[in-house]
Image (cartoon, rainbow, N blue to C red; front, side, top):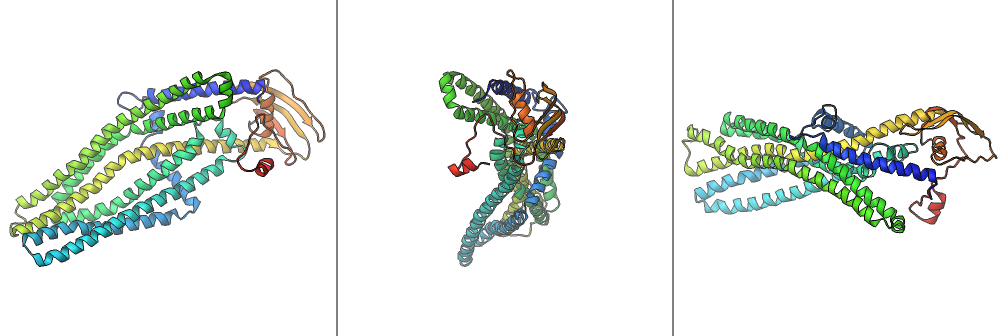
Length: 488
């Protein structure tokens, strides 16, 4: 059980965290004006922008992945090489309709059978390629999740870091580790494989389109892409903020139910089910409201990307029509012209399709930016905890046998002075009882000796061995009785 001081500190902390969570969610909504842009240049919008901020975060994530040495580079290179090989199969499959037009136009029954057999074989290979690539993409996402989560847990579950981060200003570190990293890895595997492949395919089909339709074909398609990309960037930018706010609201909602489950007996003794239901409903309302905002913003992005995709076929007809009307194919028969139109249509449509894929990645990039923001925020909080802990380690000298405080001052994270200029020494074999009214700093003094709180001034001296701290609230570790008795 908690003593009165601990209960008071926990109650104040819970009320402050609740107010902070509500305030943060309100600020997330309040700082976004009617057109979805940040109302503060140095606040919410800039912090979650899609641009240089996202690139810096991706670069840091990449450094972590490279340091993991999990053969992710080999997997990525293999995936890209496999997709390039599969694209050759898709191109060959796309050229087959033009041959069907020619064979059927010439009524060549002898050539139809071999062409049909070749078509069936190519389609079967194309389907197998798609299935294998989806599997490889999934494996890459799992490997990335493993590397990122292992790195984060290694930094988070360390002495001095766990308490500092879990009780700090970052929200829901458990959700960021267990859920946001998984979604980040999955989104990154999907987006990066497409975007890294795009330059090769765009370059190849640009050359093919130029060969078949002249300079007008690629110029028209590129102009179409630039207009679509500019409009998509404008619509996409505000959505990242809402994705981050939604993940935060989801984490708060889950934390409330975890807390209710862990304290079910206490709540039942108090008869607090009604109060907990009201709090749960309030958290659910915050989640649902944020989801509605995300869906509303994604509606505009979805309309834009879908219209861009379907309008591509119309652009392809214009690209095909220009050389036909200019007389470039006047010497061809009807069957030969149909074959040329089919090839031209495939190349033009596929070039537009590759640009459409880039545009359609906008929604995934939005989600990727949101997950990257939450994960890198956790890493930045760990950076601050590392700096604070390292500074505390310098101030906390170790001695052979005595526990001592020299001119020690302890201040709570909220600025309340609990201990001022304390000098005390406890030698081996001696006992010391610390007494005082609730909130006087008894437990906080132990936090300073344990290294959980950094002294505001002075020095703490604790032997390197032979000292064991026990918490007020017992902790039952998972595992067997032997593991419980030998913990940690």
